[in-house]
Length: 301
Ligand SMILES: Nc1ncnc2c1ncn2[C@@H]1O[C@H](COP(=O)(O)OP(=O)(O)OP(=O)(O)O)[C@@H](O)[C@H]1O
Ligand SMILES: [Mg+2]
Image 1: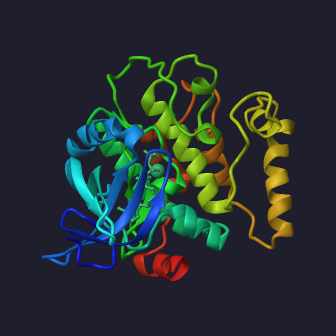
Image 2: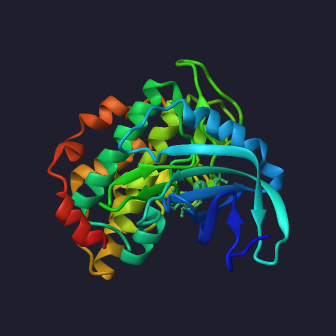
């Protein structure tokens, strides 16, 4: 008999829904004995196999300050409604990121200052560098999958599409979020997963600073993507001039030349010419001063 007024999952009292996507809903759960608070990702029935795929990859990664911690998972556990109706669900239990996902913060603020974006981007690259060193590519880097803890530190989450990869081997399985996918996935040419993560990091960086996406789709039929990638400097300048015009109208400061250069090199159509993680780390924009913890907190709160 469920004696609570809220649903329960195993030993957890469900407090509220935190979010959800294609394969799952995520709830805030309080453990009824320890009172510890966790994020519980409950998989939709048709995506039960995702638990195995996601936890198999995620659980092999060691604790990293910029990766959300996976605490435990169960393929079948009782989800009980207050009226005592019971279902069996599969779920995984994560460290709770109290400040939610970056998509919500970016939309509320319509973009961050460059030093704060740099702080978060440096944390993202540190997480991706560690994943790649373990032979794991995330493949779904986007604002919705980047969480913020109590100190507004970034935590990479959602390994639902992550891939164990062998370096220098091409992959062909279509995956990712269409609007953010690099051209080599959209055109089914085959891809190197590390290069995909770098492209996605570029889309994410653009969105962190502007609150928008850099183009509709990474195809030549999309004028924004075509101009951004044009070898003709008049055309490529047009892309950034249009962005600056819009920023002026929105009364936002101009973007630095270093940021535009870094984003252009990450959103490069040719994956072999795209900036790699060591290239990102050596880029002048990446090495400039980032917001301190207090500055970032003040801006993101
Ligand atoms: N640990 C967490 N702490 C706080 N909020 C979280 C946590 N995990 C997930 N969320 C929220 O729930 C949303 C969905 O979580 P997640 O990305 O893991 O699932 P999903 O998008 O449904 O997965 P998939 O993309 O594999 O279908 C996130 O965007 C975020 O808002
Ligand atoms: Mg997600």
